[in-house]
Length: 328
Ligand SMILES: Cc1ncc(COP(=O)(O)O)c(C=O)c1O
Image (tube, rainbow, N blue to C red):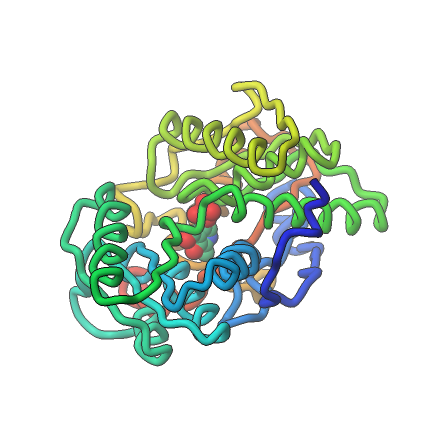
C-alpha cells in the first residue's frame, strides 16, 4: 500500500523541525537532537495531530457526526481530538476516567472552550475503553453517528501517521548526514512508539527505539506494541517483522503513578527550559527526558552517542499541574 494514498484530513504543520540542542547535549555528554512534534501547530500541537489526520478522515468517510474518545483529566489527546473534530464540523465527546480535583485549567479548560461534551466515568483507568463504548452506544440510541477513537488514538491508522513521521525524520537526517544511535520517545498508549518502529521497519532504518513508559509496566507495553505492529501490518498489507528484543521499553521512570510528577521529571522540565528554552510537560515528556538522562548516566546509551529525542508535546499540562511543577 502507498501510505500517502490513505485519506487524510490536514491538521499538522509538517515537517516539524529537527533541532540540535547544543547546551543540553553538553550537559548530558551526548549529542541530542529533538524532533519537535510539540510544534505540529494545530490546537497547541503535539503528537496527536499526526494521528488525528488519519482518524478524522476515516470518521468523515464513515459519515460520523460526533467523535468519542477518552483519557485522563489533563489528556492532551482529548484536547486535540476535540479540536480536530470541531475543525471537521463534528461533535466531540471526552470520557475521563476520573473527575477534576480542583480548578478547571490546562487541557480541561481548552476542552471546555472547544465545547466538547465531557463525561466523568469514575472508572478504573483500564476500564476507560469500555466507558467510551458505552458513550457511543448511548449516542446511537439518541440517533447520533459516533466515531470511536480509542485512548491515545492508538490504532493501525494512528500508527501509519508515525510511519510517515519516520520517513520525514529520515529525510531530515539524510540531508544533514546524521546517523543517530538511538531514538527516545514517550510510551503511553503505545501508538507513537509502535508507529515509529513500524516506520523504521518499512523505510529501512535500523536505529533502536527506546520507549520510556509513563503509565503501564514494560511487559504490558511490549505486548501492546507487538499487537499494534500486527494490526498495522494487516492494515497496510505489508509485513513489519520485529523481533521481541527490538521492542525496547524502560519502566523505571513512572514514579508513584501516571500523571504524578517525579523529582527527576521536575528537574528535567527546569533544565530543558533553562538550557534550551523548550518546555516539556509534567506527565509525558519530562519523565522521558529524565529517563534519557539516566540511561546515559548508566551507560545504557553511551556517552557521545547521537540521540533523537522525540518531543511529543503536552505543554498545556504545565498549566494543569502548577503545584507539581513548582514542587509545592
Ligand atoms: C504529550 C504526549 N506525549 C506522549 C504521549 C504518548 O503517546 P502514545 O499514547 O501514542 O503512546 C501522549 C499521549 O497522550 C501525549 O499526550
